[in-house]
Image: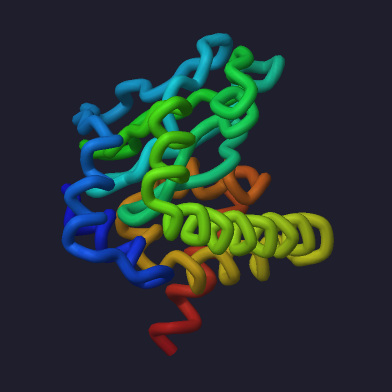
Length: 195
């Protein structure tokens, strides 16, 4: 589990062997079954979670009971209801496992302590937050100005393994499209590919 975390951190900043050992002391490991909740709306998000194996989704449930997916978190991704985590307020998001998943979890207290005791982690998270802002801006642009087919193509280009691991109705929810629309796009793309 820790190898995925170390690899992810080392892609952004350098860690000594001593820092790696110390870093792990701030985390606890958890395994989730498929469809098991990591967080439910209304609970307080007590941990920021790093996906070391598996796949999670975060979402809200609308007034009709439909899931509106906010994000997918693959191996090497962080996930939480960040507002709830930072402010220790009730979560608006649900987070559950799309497939069997293992996460490394860090509490707010340990997160703050880690930043003080391993200062390079402050830089690591700053880089992640910058990337996250760019990604959110891109998602907003795609959502507001791309056609359904362009949205789907953009998603699979950025997440090539997604079509193998995520049911198409969940991809449709993430893209704000009807499942039938995604099925039609996939069928069209397959036909074009076979020609």
